[in-house]
Image (cartoon, rainbow, N blue to C red; front, side):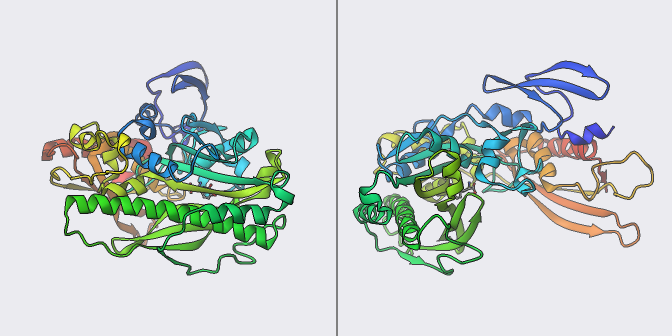
Length: 467
Ligand code: DAH
């Protein structure tokens, strides 16, 4: 039954109607956010994800994600920047990948990384999915798009399969700026931005002829001033976030001493910008990536029927920023409906100048359980053409099984051992799952019940053999 392994979720889910069944081919529809979609063998959307789509944390008043969005928006004033906060999360693979120049074999397109509704339809993996449409609509010189995004990923305190991003862009039009002089126009806008005294590091050269080139359609002066406007705009966001975080920390403990803020621009690659950079912040001993950005590829503007416009774009993860801003220690908390969490942010949407730090409520004990298993061997002569073999095993499938069963009770999943049998070549893996609720102490029996279901699901869905 190879079909079983093509589909990660192999039983019809809630809201899924079996339309017809012919031999091994089935055609079903599924409803997401009130809209109906045909599913096919690409469908890999678990019901817990589908049911969280309605939450829209970025527009829930007094939610820390919403507060973070509003603070960043305040740095990009309307009407120069138009805000889009209600775009629907189901998009075409064209919007999510092709319109941005992702090559056909880009790993981001794989079913192990992306939630597919069907072959041509996905849950957006980034807010960039809407760039081309918003450019084409050409309603404003700049825009911000905030939205929920979805990725199949690891489980730990900073990764969750749904998170929120904000996309920003600012374009200048050769036919509208005085004398057609883009460089002069962007300089003028750059000079109107505030300055700051934050220390900024540049470990890489700003561009590189092969790795991070200028585009042939842009003069070096144009690209340079657009990059300067982009970087200053984003540095001001970071400075603003950190000065609010510092004020909140001082309000909580007046003897708080902060370390000077360190940020750096590093070279990056995105299929839709060139040159491209990432901004990192030095935070609790590590460099933390907070956003990606660059000069928009002219090809995207040409396809949007706006070849005369050029400018910059960025994408920033809102959870990361909110975690820094409020000192929220675990990404699962954003999904909590517990008043001990939500109650701490009441009134802040109307009072962005007086943020309060999050005060963690008690941390319940961790409950670690290991599961070790053999992957199906790829060279099995037993026939049957098993697909869940070493080659097509992907860790994200384990993550999703654990997430599907344990939900927000799982804090962390980590691979603790890997071993290949010297004679048979079979591979064994061991994962350690930390069951720890944010809301109560789990009994060992409760943790065992989750763990037994995880063990069984690993056998059923991935065809592994437990050790
Ligand atoms: N979409 C990228 C991501 O999710 C972030 C990003 C990078 C957005 C560069 C942009 C950009 O608009 O120009 O990683």
